[in-house]
Structures are given as structure tokens and as C-alpha cells.
Length: 300
Image (cartoon, rainbow, N blue to C red; front, side, top):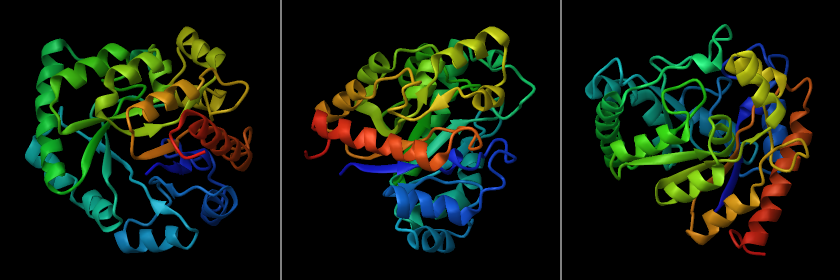
């Protein structure tokens, strides 16, 4: 069953918590659940850590807990250490009926550092990627045994950003490691979202419908902006925005043709003072639902 969700970073950013700091938590949940009508929402720094309190809070606004970002540090610690570290997050996922754990390697990532150009991100050699993939797959096997699928989030400022790195990660891992496909990060990372999605659709278990503003991501590359500077400049937006550079209908058609069954999440961080979250998220959801009907992803 296709379900549509959002992420609180449209209202209050996790990497730079000054962005949206003035927006009350109640407003985020009220707009996402009761006004816009999303089925669920991903994790954010405003939500309770206690699994039961988290589900209770979101449920009051008609929202399910979809899943949440988990930062692995497998380049710096063992699989056993990672398994121990994930336990609080895993309890949160299992208590709330989540099906996936969103994972990204951050031991050397720079996306949260406003002083580091996104162009200066870390990179792995082929041998290092193979070794990382082995450890990631072992971690994914453990999570699968707990009833949770690991979905890897390719992300700007990290070791898996370009289409070649997505390919390499998928080649270096086995069937337990699934993919979170993010259209905006794919394009910002130099990829053709339709080509990359088509190539890896058999392992896509989670979908982030993030749009981009082409002129801003070009400027970020040319001027050496940090990831956070690019966000504040307006690098990302929602499906349906006329300023956006991505057409989501062909992507949804790939999902439909391959019987995708999961969440479609509008994860598009913007400066809420420039881009009203209620208006943009409403536009994004309406666009996705219309295109999902047109492609047969959901009933007409």
C-alpha cells in the first residue's frame, strides 16, 4: 500500500536547528497531519525519544511514525559496536511499527558543517567501498533479523553521493541492504534520477520526493557553498514547484511498473521564512497524488 509522508525539516531543520526554531512543534504536527493530510511523518529533533510517547504524540494529529535517520559510523567502529549503538533507535522503530531504518554513514560526513564546501566531501577508494559494504551488509542482516529493512540514504556531503557511488554501494552489499532513493540528492550529486532509479528499482524500499532548483545547485558547485548554505539559498523544493527541475511523473511510473509498495515522503528542507511550509507541502502532496493516480501507482 502506498502511503504519503513528510519530514519535519520543511519546518524545523535538524542539521541547523536555528532554521525554524521559532515554529512551535504543535504547528508542525497540526499542519502536516490535520491541515495537509499526510499519512505519516519521519523523525525530527523535536519528537520525544521515548517510543511510546512518540507514537502517542504523532497519533494525536493523525500521523504515523514512518522511520528516521540513523547515523552509522561503520568506518570508525565495528559491526558489533554499531549494533549496540542502534538499540535505542531500533526500539523506537519497532514499537511504532516501522518497516525501514534510514541509514547514512556519517563518521566523516560534512553535510552538517556550514564552513565546509559540499564539494570537499569525503570519498572512498574501490577497496574501501568494498570493505564498507561488507560491514554495512552485516549490519543490515542484523536489522532484518529484527524485522526492519536497512535503507541506505545516498546524501550530499557523504561517501555515497554520486551515481557511481550509489552503483558501487549496491555492488558492494547484498540483498539485506536496500536503497532509499532520493531524487533531489541524486540530481545534486550529478545523477540522472530516472536512470538511477530504473537501474536500482529492485532494491528501492523507501522514496524521498525531494525536488531541486537547478540554478541554486549549480551555484553551490561553482561557488563552493556548504550543504547548509545551499539549503538556505533554496537548493531544494517540493514536487510541483515551477522553480523545480525534476519531473516526478516518470519516477512514479517506474515505481508503479515495478509494484513499489511503501512510503513516498516529501523530504525537502527549505528556509520556512522564505518558503511557507504549509503552502509548499500542500503543493507537493497534491502533485504527487495526482501523478500517482495518472501513473497507476494508486487507484484513480
